[in-house]
Length: 208
Image (tube, rainbow, N blue to C red; front, side):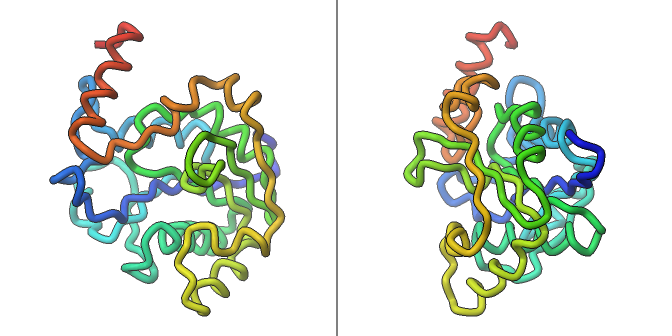
């Protein structure tokens, strides 16, 4: 990571956890909470780490700064907006955003995304997901804030609503694979069954 880039790492924890049944980010996975695993990965690439949450009180015992969404109820786009806005206010060039339920995200991958981004550009990894990209595992330059706020003002809450209005840089699948299996790094623990799958991944790695 180049020294000129100052990065705010933001863990997005604004979901309602309806499918999981409880607060998934606080669930234990192999002896550590999922959110602590994510925080450790984000810290590899960011000079400062915060949690962006609709319910900040839930994370009172997490050793990471917690901030509320600027505009609650906007979903993932609201979390990205909050991260980018606070990054700019903190004097950072880039907001690195990661979903709170990605227990196997690679810190080295995140650092590569930060290297690819700058104040006016966003960097995202390619994936097999429905969008072909992972917008909740991405580095957004603080110059993207204008496009994000324009999307919010026009009522477009899609997480990719502002992508056509910013310089978008994509880390292709071949390079993503250098950091691990994409299906593991980008998996989300949305349901109890997903946690069981994650435990299986840890077991296959000899980490249980």
